[in-house]
Image (tube, rainbow, N blue to C red):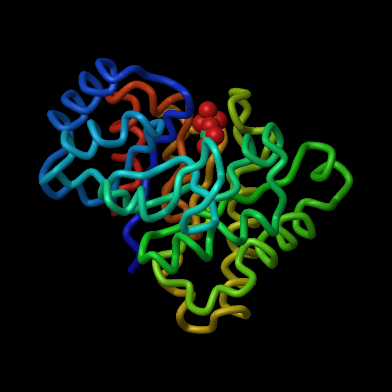
Length: 249
Ligand code: PGA
């Protein structure tokens, strides 16, 4: 039985004060045993503050990015060891904004996944097609390619999470059709089984892209989906908790 993971990707939002206010409210809402796993992904400078606020709570800490190398001359980058020291559990790898705006390719993303996994943290590999790719019937080949290179050289899936996020659904207010998300999740699950065998059963598959309280249940009650990666709607703690509640099993 996979416990659903509902993740709040804050992107480049919130100051330290706003983060404190948010987390205080969230922890007021979330019971000690929420029946679902929650994680928040603040910007790097907010991580120490968030780690302090979340200590002893059922809400986990995540990071939005990481560099594949353990250390070195990589100005502006952050290593997995630095994240681990702060108590980070989950790390986004290959979010579509990183791929598109910062030119991260599948091999680079694969390096991140391996680094995170080797450090004992849980990578969230983000995959998904563009609208053009979907319209031309290439959604699955694209996602399959992202899986193959993103998980290349990964011995065991460990705490791996795969987030299916169609690029055209991110930040647009237009979510995927639940039936399409379901079909893609089933294909990803079959691919993972082929690749990792029984070890793949614990891998959680999330949907992401314009999830909000009004539509979350349509995705999160699907047996193929084990949670959601939420951007815009996660910036409000009440909305985030409302979404998470639809995933409780
Ligand atoms: P959105 O973002 O919920 O604002 O569409 C999702 C994401 O980028 O992970």
